[in-house]
Image (cartoon, rainbow, N blue to C red; front, side):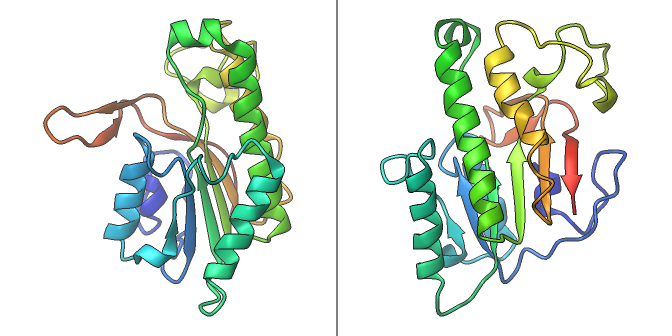
Length: 214
């Protein structure tokens, strides 16, 4: 996730991303209390953002599968920022995610929850004219038989592995949607793990930006 915060350095991909100023922004981090999200929130704070600039919606308050809850999230965020007039950035990390066994037992729920969260958040972001929208994809979106190492050109060349398909396809659909948003990106870390010594989240391979508009 380092590249999300380091617009002033060359990312670990073949694409040169332009600098992005995270200061004087309000950042909504969905899933910000989760395994990956809390590390992103920590990096935002380390980057100089104050607590009032970081919004971490909790499921008990905002069910992101519901359109009315998403609209309420934006309304509450804008109301809280009314006197500061900060542009809003959305980093969408929330998801219904599990292992192979969970994927087999809940394919419909995985597809529904993830696609509803993703497409509705992105549409609401467009309607509210956010400064930037960043969504996290998944390597599960790639075809079942993809040459290693994976390349972006292979993404649409087949159906995902069946166990991962509901989750992978729900995330993959977000690649079709960003065009109306002036600044949007879907980025795919291959695999995340946590160091037992530091507790830090680490990507095992280089994150790959599958689609972006800057």
